[in-house]
Image (cartoon, rainbow over all chains, first blue to last red; front, top):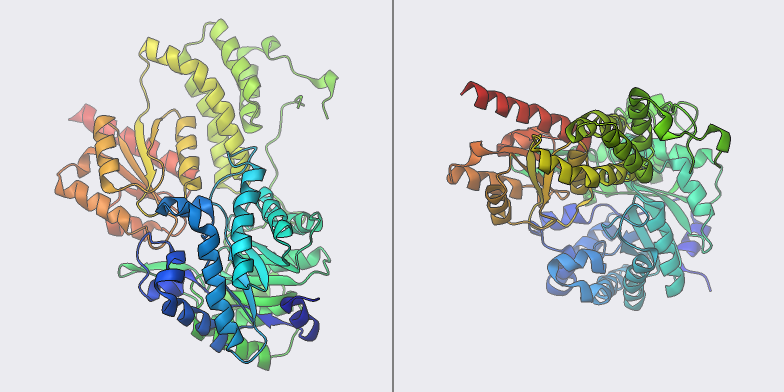
Length: 337
Length: 234
């Protein structure tokens, strides 16, 4: 018994994932502070439109509207008891759209971070995190998701807790982290570190990689960092459509469809096999990406200079990998502990 | 991991060396060592206010700088802040007794609809690390929470955080309400959060946008100083 994503990966060199969930929903009228997951129940047609937007633009994989469907996040809306239900609904609608598409589409159950900091530096225990992720995972499974997809993670502890929860749910999974702070995650994880983290997980994911972060250029540097570790596991790149700008009272991402098409082809050249977008990536971006991936040939991996020339500057000089890492503070002497 | 021969005995260091060592220990997030260092300086007759500003704030300034420069990351900063807190717990009652001046007071919270509080917590901890008093409103705050608490606490600074593009406009609601009530100029208003930028801060009428926790501390210090100078001049 093989899962739908493994089957597709076995027959295709690259797959296209979807784009933004939040940006699309805001354009459909989601308002300030509302939980998007409630729409799985109250605005199902809009969620169908969101999913169809990805499928009709050529995505082979799309993520469910369940990013914040965990007890910790839903608590703000006094809906902490609904994580399973809202996750299930998100996957049921997705299943319906995928099955009606007439081609092989993978429904990936989105699992976002809890928003809490885990022990030892924070207060969320491993057991609590596993329990929350497990609840979401079971809901997505019940709704018919093909794989689970944890994303935008910054802490290794949280990534491992999600993996453990997915094992409890008996589901295949993928996982991506957000490298948004000087080329690392907020918690300081480098691209090279993440390969090590993934290698150390007992129930290995089907694919791993990066999503969100800063601009399209940064995420390609991260993908090159993954590839440099010599991993055999498929790499995922889901970058933002440029940088958010505040314009006339609303937020706009400055990446054009043409830029995202270049990004997609370069991501494949950097070694990514699953390529999609994140914040700001709309159906028109996805169509341009799909066309570029189908019509342009795979080439050699670009150099950092070529990435900058095509997509713009990096947000930081280095990303903490290789020999050029910034030196830590000189200590006066050795310390116990 | 430890090398006994190289172990440092804090009480054998002279004052300057001890302060330097406390900088290192803060950097490494060693809470017990910081508590020990604070107690040694107290025994040597240091004023609590001097220990705060010279040893603890001095050390946290280095942490803040390296955080800003992408050398340290959130986990290290949280550990350093935790060590700082250990030292502060000893100093706090003594500072109150001696009537030492406070650098300033900040009310901070994540705006209505937003549950993200990692950035806000970091700012709070770094502000405490810099010697400010911080009143943390937590997440999901309507305008009343900011204004009532700022008034009750006689705060100098109101800090707002948002991590969602959908919740950041709420900062403007808070500032507009302050303007309506004629209290806008009573406070320094600082805003921050991943989707924000300087343009946005200006557009909504904040005093400053702070890119990260280290910048927030520098900005807060700068504005409080200006506020005090104005008072002295006026």
